Length: 101
Ligand code: FES
Image 1 (cartoon, protein in one colour):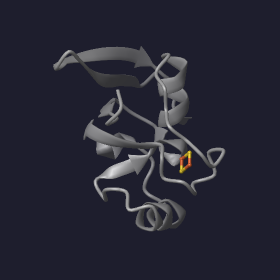
Image 2: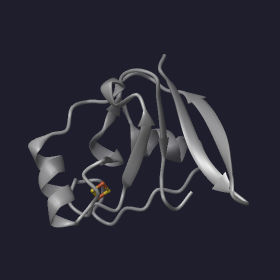
Image 3: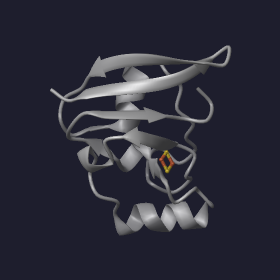
Image 4: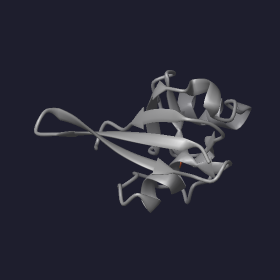
């Protein structure tokens, strides 16, 4: 099973929460199952852009960016380097963070 490292900032220090996920699990579901909040306002329909996460390592371990994800990122002015966690599936080891963790 892929290993996912979720990096949070607590009192200015990076803290890593490591979990194992089933291949194909979305980043959003994985983070929520680990107890971390994920912003979202569209019912995970790749519309709002709120669920963006930054991939620190393992971009290649995620599903490729779809046209719909690119559209939602442009529309919502999401940093092109970030991924929308509701439509990014984990297929290998990765390390991610979110601005609000
Ligand atoms: S939850 Fe809205 S784009 Fe991901």
